[in-house]
Length: 575
Image (cartoon, rainbow, N blue to C red; front, side):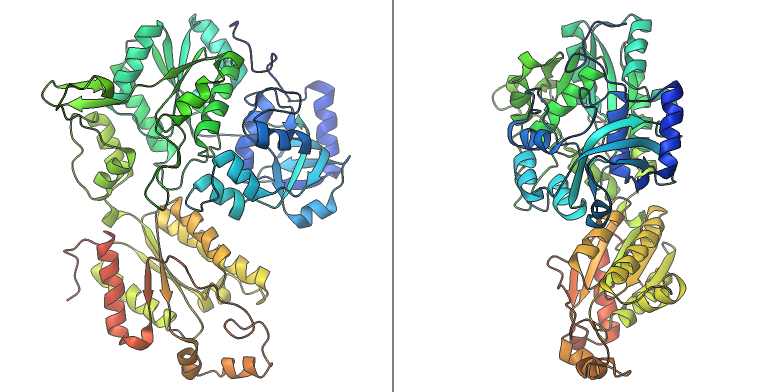
């Protein structure tokens, strides 16, 4: 086995064995249970298999406070990222310190038992400010933490029962012990880890080969395949792309492996965290790139983190790490020379070419050619197969507005026009129809309204993922729930929110059923717009007042907006 130590000294393994395992399974039958979310499934896998060494469970409140403020556990050990089990207030009210609870996967399989040591309500905005440096909702990590995670944290020690099951790319899913043994079997002592959540292109390969030569080391493309950034290319496509570039490395010198990591997009802190994880996996070197683990640009168009901020930040902790940090040079292509050159080595007047990840995606969604100097043809072919032009991708058209605003009529008209164009299968998810067929048992309480919208969002996300168009027309009064649906759908495709902004007085005048009158008379409680709020969308993709247009014109405006967004070909017309 390799001599490279795990962070903190010992590689943790929290899985019970033998009699202890049977006893843990027996206790799980009677324990109170929590069903883990997809993100929590990723965290617990790395807790149990030692990827998060030296952690032996979820952070205590003291450790959490210390990590948030000082990037260290309370005993002084370097650890930059809070790792806690977030639960609902209702579940927290049922459990107590000293109790053992059982953590299950979404299908009910027992993953681990948790001995609870701490239960508390964190200041999530403070955590976002300290960990991500921002509370800006355009930062996916901060947005998830503040708006999507559960409000109560639980700390405690874990006893592993069942490793999470994966059906995809099993040959690449080695835990830290298996990875270390694999390196030993190959005789690899110096191994560079390259972290990536994006496809790899020619500049990346050249950069990696140069570092391999300088360090006389092997290399593993150790890709994160868990939660990344909404809109990222899915890991199935990415891994297939990585397989296609391996022949461009020296034979037998590079491999692909998978890391089940829920990225936080935390920039400098995350880069340090990722280095520690790679140390636990047995790597000797870790490449930190430009804007490493950064989420891109904020609402003002600037980067959340400086281009080299993560590189400098992690290097400051080199003496406390058991893995060597390598700073990735930034390469640009010089057409006159026909080669990639480090930015610092460009000659005066020389214009180096570069295509960002966002620019590449734009080329793909617009159906434009990717330059040969930038990418390998096999990778471009795979990307085009997985990520077709936007006018061939699935999307969700989400109409929201008051009762009587005209959203259902508008949605139905748009659906008919889209079917006339015939470029995709189109499904209409009207609020009343969904309630009748999918949510008939639900009331009109806030909890049940939210659940109904979430069901609509789930169905729409499946339609979007499979290349269809979901046209939704619920009232959807609450901004938080609409945000949840947006996040769900943007994992699969494009979300287009249309605020049907017809004034309340017009909606009341249109009310054929007399619902508004009954609400004002107190005969209907919790009626949206009267005694229950409607959160006006702040940044919808489109806003339209149906009292200002004929319905035919309103339908045309929506269709034209979809064309402007590239979701319909400009040649597609129903005129």
